[in-house]
Image 1 (cartoon, helix red, strand yellow):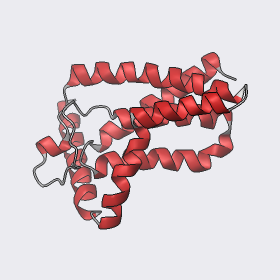
Image 2 (cartoon, rainbow, N blue to C red):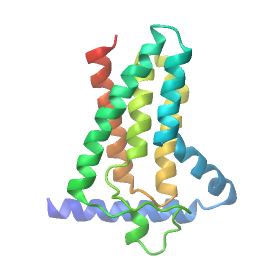
Image 3 (cartoon, rainbow, N blue to C red):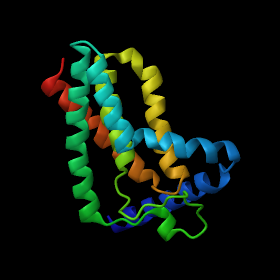
Length: 176
């Protein structure tokens, strides 16, 4: 098990350094800090509130399901961050170019990625055609977290899995 963990840490470090250094350009430096906020609390909660207010029933109920998914998944995220204490990549890997607003809490799993996938998952389960747009958007949020040096790839993969898992659980418990 220890050998597997060391191998994953090595792969994580190589990928994050590659993305953070080799993908650097003005366009990405402008785009990624904006994309990343789509998975943040202000955007997520504002979007769900607006959807709930503007849409007629039963579409407005999707926002309620997504909020339940978001809340439940974030309880797990906070527990994992508290228990595992994984430092952020920019704190451990010297050659990284961190975002202009580095975070001080722990890295694993990615809360922004969990958030976007917990919301997108509910919407895609209700209207599969929306996945054409929403899944790539959610993936971009995850990529932005790595590009900005805030998360390792495994933080993002686990965040996407948690968000999706909670979306599926809520959809089959409350939705349909």
